[in-house]
Length: 296
Image (cartoon, rainbow, N blue to C red; front, side):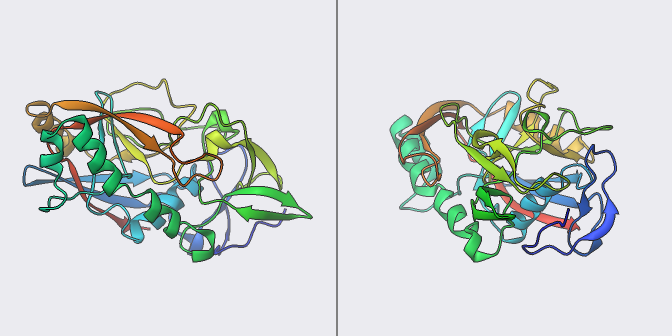
């Protein structure tokens, strides 16, 4: 087949470890790009170094790199502090007189709800990832007609086994420090979309709920592999020492308040204020100061 088109310069090198051979991304970049995530807590910076796996999850890695290169993740927060995963990528950080994280937390659930609504990055993402903007590479489409993908969406294809992405050897598994892309539950969304999947036949179909990732990600702080088949793990921590230090600092001081709010308000298939999620919001801001790509 002739691989497509939008913003891609493709090398004639097949991916290793995948069932379906797939081309490398722009300019013959490496199989293993690297990223530096700087997390700040109580004035101390913790730098997490990540190795990404473009050879197995090319479109997820590209999506993450494009978001990072556009500065999307800078000055965001870990908005959902769970025992096994820390979730980020969806809400900004503010500590101004008009909009203060600490004051919002002190006000309880209503204060946190107002804060999260105010700093939500959903609209910013929808503008950045609008296919017309040309900043985020499309991979999910409404239809496939006459040999062409039609009406691109701003979400990401799901590169995991439940969504037809099979890795023959060496697939990443849930592990301490692993980085994965995340999407909110959409079990009521029965829509199907077309997937511009590297190495697949043209016009392959998939359930939208598995191809609805926008910018959310999680850092795993447990060792469970129970969700590996439904979320794309695309990067591993190069050294766990810094994460150990950060986890110890958080465990000794962080408490949480459960806060429910509507999410996916700019989703193509969902009405605004129709999809609700509950977060365990930490009492102190865990700030993602920056996400930098250090090796392409």
